[in-house]
Amino acid sequence: MQRFLLICLGGALGSGARYLVSLPTARWVSSEDPKRLEAFRKANQDNLALDAEGNLAYLAASEWRLEFVMEKWPEIDFLKTREHD
Image (tube, rainbow, N blue to C red; front, side, top):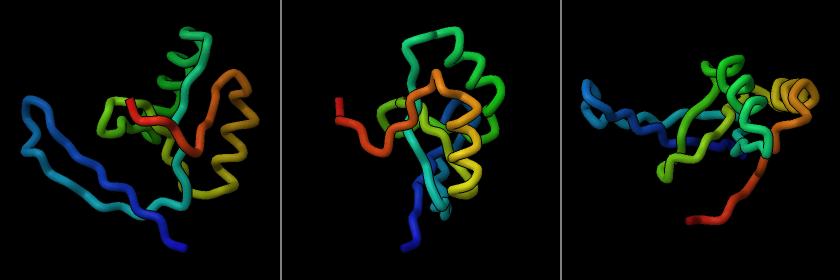
């Protein structure tokens, strides 16, 4: 099954452009340790995005990459689903 993610770009210079991208997997991420979450953000900034509600998500290029990152960052919670605020 093919999965798609809608990415919306905005901001001061953004035009509200929207892109539909294909990704094997994505997970919402969080941590009870703010310092580790910030370290994770810095180390993985090219693979992170915010959802429509501003929640941080990790975008993995493959299942293998997701598993590798999850093993490397045990303090980070990788969630398949989340409740809407």
